[in-house]
Length: 308
Ligand code: NAP
Image (cartoon, rainbow, N blue to C red; front, side, top):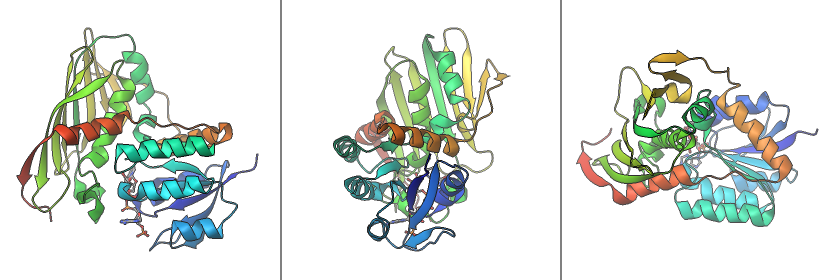
């Protein structure tokens, strides 16, 4: 089959760490072009804006959007409007209405919108979902603590309005939780710590409540140095599940459970994108994004020391 000619928008950390290697290793894709204001990619034709790329590459079939979330909507709308399939990084947009509008646009255009949740492709997530199916959840705990200076060096957009702050990684935990739990959750309470010079939280505590009434407590913190923690624990009426390392590893009652080796989150995401594009189908799940938006609606805010 002919490879899908794809253009990448926003050449930063995730484009270089994951998208470019995954695309170069996948024969279903031809990375033809890139659009970034300040960066070039060897072996692709480079443009300074998505508009210039779409004008210069009429044969492009797909676009992957890797800019900060504040700029996803305009880029995705433009690409769908020009008849391209769109791969959208997480968090999908700045607002939930934007995502809804993109899904509608993709349907009307008969094009694919793949609104990706990369953490759902971590090796132990699907095994955990299968393990939890049919079980009664009693309680849960998310601990998502990382050092922002290490993982997001110089990314000022994260602290601006619409930049999500700690929810930039924290939404990954929620995307896993909502994939593995056999029931819906809602946000009961939230407390955000917001640096006095920032528009987005540096840490958050969220109390989720599952449909059955089970309490799930999330603690997220961007100020964490030392051992980095991306864990989800779920207590059922019999056993306790632990997902660690962002969904890569799984244990039951403290005993490690072997899971099948994964091809990697981004190779799997691109496999999924190719299959959706072949079928003209979309994959959009607003639930993790809605829960983050709900946390922003109900949160109590405490101002903390400035982030430099
Ligand atoms: P990043 O390193 O800041 O890269 C984003 C790139 O987008 C920038 O290098 C910039 O390139 C371009 N851009 C276009 N308009 C921009 C604007 N107005 N302000 C700032 N940059 C702009 O960010 P990233 O870590 O790659 O994250 C990008 C997206 O991927 C986010 O939605 C993030 O949540 C998601 N993601 C990141 C990771 C990760 O580990 N970093 C993992 C999974 C998903 P030019 O200056 O050349 O235009």
